[in-house]
Length: 75
Image (tube, rainbow, N blue to C red; front, side):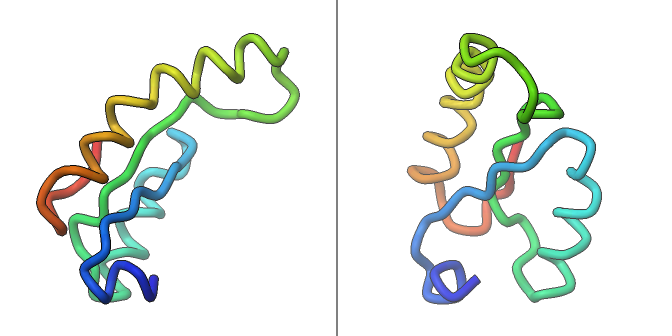
């Protein structure tokens, strides 16, 4: 969270199951709107090709979080 507090763009990659927790935690830490990239869950235990496909699907969310205004929110 130190980078975010310094207004450096970051994106937190979160499994879809944990989105509400990520939103709650970021707000509790004083960083509402923390950019999130929501990925299909679980990431572990899936074939490599599927993990790569999921990462590719998250790319636009990651790019938007890194290039958009700080505090603009996530997916």
